[in-house]
Length: 581
Image (cartoon, rainbow, N blue to C red; front, side):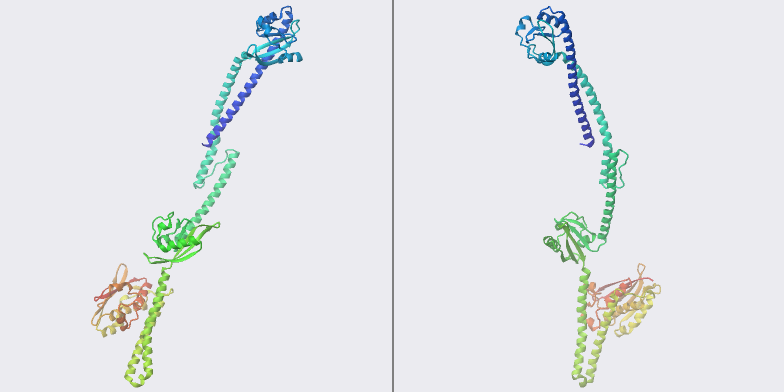
């Protein structure tokens, strides 16, 4: 039920209470007033009757009572001093002796004591409620005269007054009904307005205020609610700012974040978590065991819930080969557990670097072991007497030692070069460079090596090829390494072709050979450090296994790309793409 109707019914209830009370009170007062006036009139009639009785004193008591009753239209009773009824206007003569003694009647006793008496009581003789008035009488037969009037004579007057009073009160009640409707509407309108504004404030609508000037109490309530609305808006603004800041932080975090409640339902995740675990859909509100079935993740979650302590573990995602370091902590509030917060750090690169470091150390150790062992073996042989026994043999041993020393030197130089290229502060001196001139210079440097194997190096680089933005020395090393590999792995009498041209606003250099080619299974790893397609043949050619890795790093530092295409037995083609100057 609305406040307006509650107020209306309260007004109606109050009106009914007032009207009913007024009716009862006024009815009582009117009855009382009617009886008092009737008693006064009856007393006046009794006094008049006394005067008549004294004038007609020679008449018998019964005849006198009859005569007086007929004159005043009321019951007249004459009572002797001992209480015996000597005459009664409403009783036959033969019944007069059967009447009770009236000495004990209250109006008679009061008249004897005070000179006038009255009472209202039920008459056993007439079987009706009567109003009695008694006065002393100076008569030789009677000493008290009593007049009686039935109360039923007042009923019509009482009904008329009741009807008039009831009609008036009904009109007042109807007026109060109309007034209650109006007052309830007028009184509740400011409260309804306040309730409407409060509802708008409750749903987060900003800038809403309750107007003033509707009464002291309403204005005070409006002032309190307006102040509360201002505080709520300030708090909502602060909370919104904090939520936006938190959302921005979570979006910008590279680490995945997940928050769950005590039942294992997901409350919050950030984009990094979705990406790490491949969850594009909506996951908030769903159980963790339903969203992700990764055994390590679920095991760590259950362990944290059971122990209540922080848990750290590594989780590997098989589909993406991601390695995550998960840190689980309880979400405590008021000394109680309210859930779990998990942060997932992507340590895949660290694991990859650690693996590469181990492989690099193992490869370097392996590559160094052979030349060092050879140098040590031949040196020990020479020290054991071979130096004095045969000069030709000793010379051959020294040549082997020198050859492996050069291989060792080349390996160390390549390792140092690769280390410099991989350094964070590695930089190049870039400037516009004539690509065709650099290609011809590299051809000239490798011409003797190619001629020794009968390999022809052809250049297809027109003068229209634009200049490239490159480092002269580093670009020459790229070309020399690629030409060196092409000559090494091309059989005698083969061909090596170097061509240059443009492709989509960039410059492309292609070095192709007719050599042994590279099997398709080895192509993805061809640029890895110390990776060789044919390790025995590579070592025979004096390769360190770092040349192509160095080439890749130099090209990437230039902002370029390098690709390779090859078929076993048909040759290989390396393409380097650089930016125009």
